[in-house]
Image 1 (cartoon, one colour):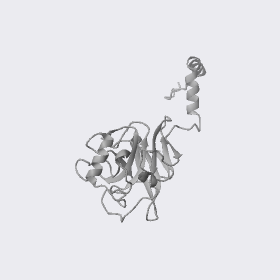
Image 2: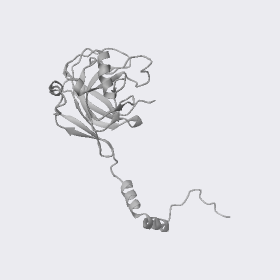
Image 3: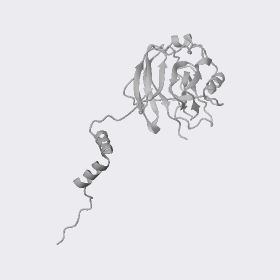
Image 4: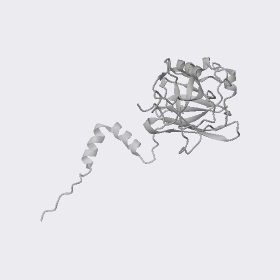
Length: 240
């Protein structure tokens, strides 16, 4: 009685591997290195920075920032952005508003400064030039024009530092929208989406989430004396 042949395919024999090595030795070496156990995969990195000293940022703004900043380096090794958060974020009584996370921050509160080393896009997909911007808290309107942008209404609006000189300024929403729109050169404000810090294991840290979104997670001090865990999507756009 004849034996049935196995349905599985046999592995390449020594002669095949030898021919492959002779024809493409460089490729074989690279594959061996990349597939070796414990070889570190390329990923985004968070690097420490000193205080923000750029003179284009007003003294009023620089004075309230933490002396420690963060540099985000992409998987290809390029610098994406530098970011400094406020040393102590002013807080108020948290408002119970559906779809929000950070309502203990009053709208227009200065949260930090970000410097993009390369052109990028905001969370809406709008083109943003390389440069330095303040970050101010805002809630996007609960209307049909903003539905589906994010599961949360909390955003940080980008404002060119030349237009934002007073760290303590309380800016009306419509005015803040116009100031931020200059960062994108459109009629819409330039925004980065805040998200939940739940599930983040380290603070500070940078991770890559769904849809390749780069998320920075930090622990911020507040005027109440308590720390606030914060997660900000610094790279990535909303689902279209």
